[in-house]
Image (cartoon, rainbow, N blue to C red; front, side, top):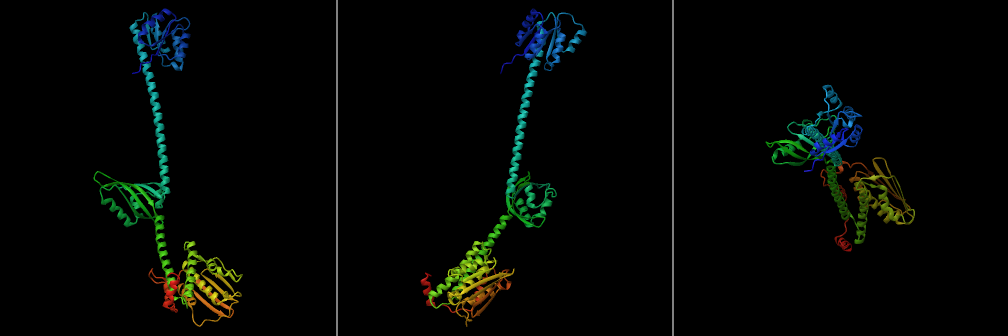
Length: 515
């Protein structure tokens, strides 16, 4: 245990012999004794050191003990310092009262009894030491309180920051947290939960009775069954649908922890709600896209099947060239549609892609028209129609001679695209006696498949063809009820069967092209 630090005791007397006797009497207390022979000398000691007890002779020449005591008490630092008067003369009661008023705490008469003096001084020394210890303890306690307060403030700030981060994370994840007291029906929501349910915290009180109508009934029933089914279950997660006051339905994942009472009944449920509506909609779009891709793949195969089945040719080379050209036209349209994510294809690009090969010989081909995007099914039909017109022109029309020219113009009236194909300067033409594949596919695909119209005029100057392509929804009469129906197959089936390549010729064509 640490040794006790001695305290200071100030002895004031104008007679050195008395001071020495006081030192001898008090030495065994083990404290630090300081002597002063005058009031001034005593005040100097007091200003330099802390003093526990002051022993003052009442009768001194310059300032008596009463005046010194008054001066000591007047200083704020010494208001609580113990002062003991030592007097060799008999003091009246009036003198004693005056001494107490000046700040004295006790009197010791002369001759001094050593035991009495030591006992009196020891009491005030112990009181001084205990006071100092209490002050030290108070300072330590105050310091600990200050440190603890700072720790609590820092912890509170960390909690606030954690709550802010949690709120930001919940908001970023479109989540909300909640706590439901099953017995009282009271529910506590954070701002994210109000946001998910589409209600305002100022006007909506989230009790179970208020929330229940906003949950789709079958999902609410499943939620009840989940809570009641397994008494040992502590957590659960399930998808629920909620309907906001404005009628908007949202898909949510409800993840929660269950607190049960001593009987096993559900007492409290706490958890988070995650709005997964965007994910659900993305899944639906993905499913729809997959079905659309499947549908378009079947359409493309049906068109290819119709091309292969209906293309007429006199030899394998002509047959292969005709089939390849028509499939190439479909591939070009498919590329344009893929670039637009199957939102549509621009008429100008369809025309330019088909006629690009015929522009190298000079200004023989002119095109003009606005930017118009056709839906995928219309774009495929137009691409095949343009290919048939271009192929026919190269074989028999204006593009078969150097003097021929071609003008392609189109306009859009808000409902349909009208494309005009005018050939001039080519060989004389006349209306064919029978319809070839090109004419058949034009009429079947445009007239029947998309409810458009084809007008063919074989003028002496060249072919004048008008294609009218509606841009709106297809008429219901052009479709069957089944989702698996291919409109292109319907149109192909409506075509008269063209003369087919003899079986031997077809086999040779397959051999030439590795089929």
